[in-house]
Length: 299
Length: 97
Image 1 (cartoon, chains in turn blue, orange):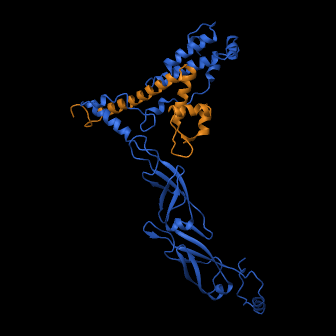
Image 2: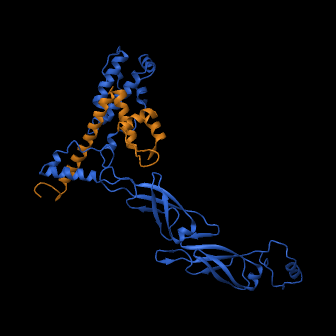
Image 3: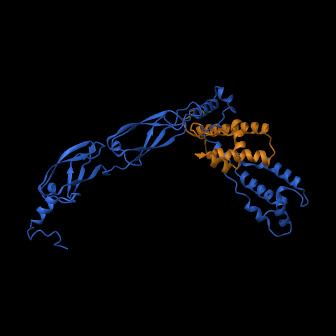
């Protein structure tokens, strides 16, 4: 561990003002952002900053002088964040400047050509991408729709939601992001789709699932009932003696996407009347099921 | 993106100071949203401004000059790096090609 007085180049008797001055002098020379090409600047600057941290605090300095803490106490100097130089070398940021070499880029030689190209490139750097989240009703996600969203910075954005879009999918709208700092194209808008659940439809891949309540008469005798699909209702033939849990397939009534189409699976659910029904009670009371009808036989 | 409250906290500056820095264009937040947004680069730049002002005794006039020169230097460094990079690529502007 280096002696902090040595690092700052001051005497042990230095006044706080002398220490401050010495630190400033070194910081001006060694600050990594004032030496962007010097890989060792950061290390040396940290050493100086740590020494200053120790000696500029009267209490820490007193304890160091008394031998209560060693210079490693200075190692725990407040952690420096990242330096500006780590970001400033990129293109397309608001602080970028080509003024330092603009004249060189005007000549006819090969370097002028290279510099012009570099300047062009940074001038044409695109704007940033902007991220949005769009909640889409279940049926709109299945069938596709055009939605207009109001942008937080003002203005609107038309988003064409393709049929069959999935929850969590991101749509990229070219050129609808932030404007470029120079003359480059704007960035893109990235719209993350959140599909809202539906009251009775669910989706698995390209298939749609729905539970369809039927009466006990429809279950026993069969018949045609109206069944909802994502594009309107269709008539569905219920076979005789249908049960809760029986599933009927409506081919091609699922999500139309990627050239094909999924199916809709209709799961039947037999529902007893909610209101008391004397006639039904009387009928069932007078009905004796055959001995073969024992749904709990295998239990 | 970093919102203004996070930025103030991470850059260790108060709102009044930040207003001055933005007005002087030392810090350029993204103003395309209803609330200003900042980048990691802005945080690092705020750190540099803080070091210059408080650790090196640079006054506001000098700060303006220094930031401008630093940005020019980075522009130059980038142009130089690209020029050197192009020289290394055969057939892409190399002398004699």
